[in-house]
Image 1 (cartoon, one colour):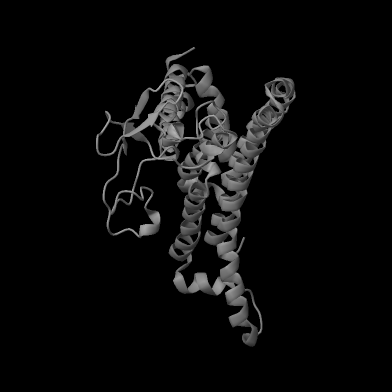
Image 2 (cartoon, one colour; image 1 turned 30 degrees about the horizontal axis):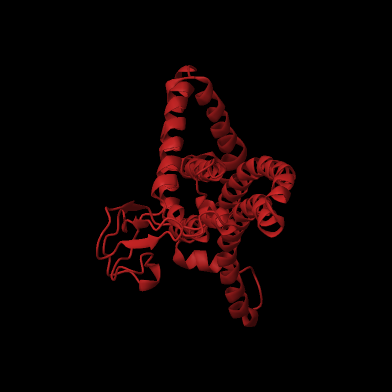
Amino acid sequence: MNMRTILAVLVIAAACFANATLSAHHGAADKFEVVQLFTHLVPAPLVLADAVDDDHGSAVVDDAHGAVDAHPSTHPIMAPTLGFLPAVLDMDLETPGTQFVLTNMQLFMVMSILLIFIVLGGIPNYVRTGKGDALTKVFAGFCMYIRDDMVYPVMGAGTGKKFLPYFLGLFFFIVFMNLVGLVPFSATPTAGIATTFGLSFITLLIMVGGGMVVQGPVNYLKHLVPEVPLWLWPLMFVVEIIGVIAKPFALMVRLFANMSGGHMVVLSFIGLIFLAAQQAGDGVGWVASPFAVGFAVFIMIIEAFVALLQAYVFTYLSILFIGGSLHPDH
């Protein structure tokens, strides 16, 4: 195992460890209930536990032994006050004025960015010299496929070369978030609608902004509507505007639904074990566990394929949408 592979594994392990120890979900009261299985699909603030605070700490009395279990208070790792943002973005409702809190989803986004630099860092040297480790050679093949079979055929070599770094980053950013979301103690940012909204919104900005830069604002708006009778032009203009917005909206919903849906199926199978034990006793839970785990593993294998497929679909459709805006004649 080469140093690049070891470093990538360490980054993934560190992110999973931080999520397992710092995520607010892991301190929830329903820690051993079925509901807790689904919490890694929901953003959770990363928090630090203080020593027991007389003002904020709580005490729980154990009726069986009479012992008092003091729970330390917690506070977010990072919670800067950003008063210019709307209150709807406030994730720390108990702290007035706090508009931004570091969450487990953001942790794994940063991890994915680090993986991009680690895994793809040796590719330029490999392309120039032909020398590189096995990991570099594998991902160089992915990069060349994206360039030669996805970007260049749609956008052409000239325009495609300018946008290639963005599409490479987009593809691997989604891939790493999708795949690492299958690792124990991880979280899946693409299973949250906020993440997929951000990615699709960037596609929309490049579509509209790039189209206006290349064609000019007036020509861009003119090319939105095909040749139709003058009386029909206002209606068609509204329809085409809706169509422009619908394209990235479809990207957002597709990626979110596929990633969250697959995780929900896996977690539902595992949840059947706890549900059977709760409803019919521990013995029934043990009997149901091999079947539930077997089905969950089968879905996990399919999810690994879906993780790659959805990254490909999102990236390729973004290429098509952006290429269509830059070159409407095509």
